Length: 420
Image (cartoon, rainbow, N blue to C red; front, side):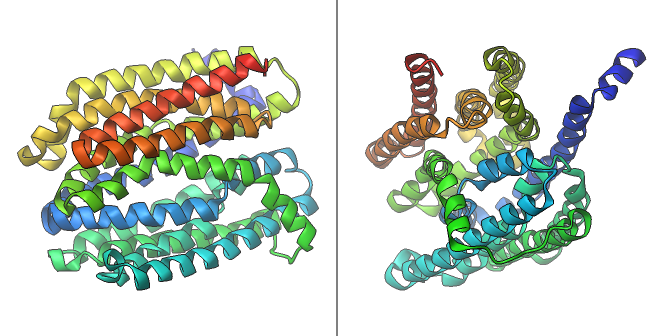
């Protein structure tokens, strides 16, 4: 056993994968475990209605996060991974991406202001949306894509542990009544911004990367390069958050609160797979760029990770009632079926990541991934618009699962049709 471990660690690629996996697992685990600690507390202290209101604000701001990410979590990661030994190129990538992100952030803030001015749903509580928007700044300042590309995720794990733990404790200490609900987005945003600022310091100190103004044509080239995966990310967000937004307009904040509470647990379970897929992505990019047999590699990845997804889905589905009751209390017991049904969504979501990100995106076949997402995203939104007003939460579940299954079918159909 010890000999096998030593042999594994002697392989540089596998050693880096394991190191990045554990760093990402720690980071991702923190992103989900800490909120899971606060979830039961917030539901009880704020009440289901206020919790639903926070969920709606988070869903709306999620669209701006997708806009400012602009697919760079994949395209910039790929570029950094392929040029990680070229410091001049890394400076160009970093600076160009940050310029685009800050321009998109300004546009996002203007759009949010228009929404607040023009619509009662938003101007009834403007500070809720502005404070939640702070997470957009945090996402921009925190270039996970750079650390992922150079495969040095350990650099940002410690600061995230410190920042997120501190602000999670602050929630317990400061949020005592339902009227304190604005403190939740404020503290969450401050934690994200603090972590982002420190990560920029690490990039400059450890990798000699500095922000430099770039020629317009260089910036435009990166803007074009990220367009396909931006559309994919935007449509992916439609698949996951449009249900919450539509449900808010046709139902009450209380119903949204019950759904969002179950969805938060679902996101935490999905987060178990994120470190694996993120750590694999740079490796997938290099293997496919080196024209190593893609099909056998993807099959191995699919069997292992797909099998894990199937196992986790079955276990959670069987224990969903006990999990929901334990986390939120007996009052939520009748909504435990939501978590169980979402496990179908989980399985196909993981499979779609393997096909779409680890294969199509890594081999620069982004347009096929985008085309599949376009079909699945539009169908999902249409189903949401038709089903949610009549079926409420059940309408979301039917739409989301249908969208994920359709995405799988579309990608496989294109792969076989064009022999990708």
